[in-house]
Length: 271
Image (cartoon, rainbow, N blue to C red; front, side):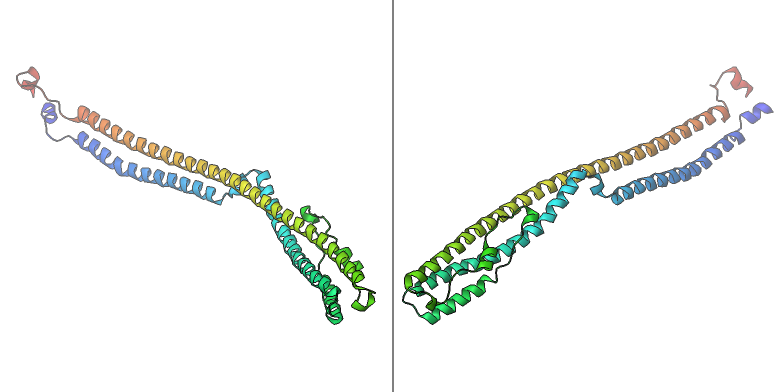
């Protein structure tokens, strides 16, 4: 009777084993999904952490400070350039007016001479004192002293002859021309200095950007590594489950299925 039961096509043990194998898959897929989501969350947190991390913190402190220092200098140079240019234009105009005054000093109209002297004195007072100490440019142009002392030109009638008048105008023009030469040098120095600072800013900026790019590349490489490792882990777990499931099914078949015998054997006769 027992032997007849073994030869039956239906096996309760096999059915239970198959049921266990079938029920294991949804549970594995659920756990697999939970793990996958956990890894994705971890990767997302890593990416967010990199995004929140300011790249400036990873830049060499000296480069950052040097960039700030250089950029702070530019406005001072611009102010110096603007004020010096203004004085240059006024002083250049004074030279032109003194040339005209020299022509009036000999045989010209006394009224025109005196009017031009007054205009020159008024224009001279428009010159502003420029301080270039902040940027290391402090070559005196002498205009402040000329303002204080005056050009030394009196009205037309105060001179006994044309020669004395011409000499006074010539001496005044010489002072102004010297001041104009110094102003020219100061302007050239300021603009050369600004060009040098701007070149240094570009150099430092490129160094900072290089550090930032290297830092970003490193972070992207870490994220890619994390993504690769996570993918390999999930792939290995999935493969391991499939292999184990196949082995379990094979073992179940071997243990629980009715044995089969070749026709004509003694066991075949018993069955």
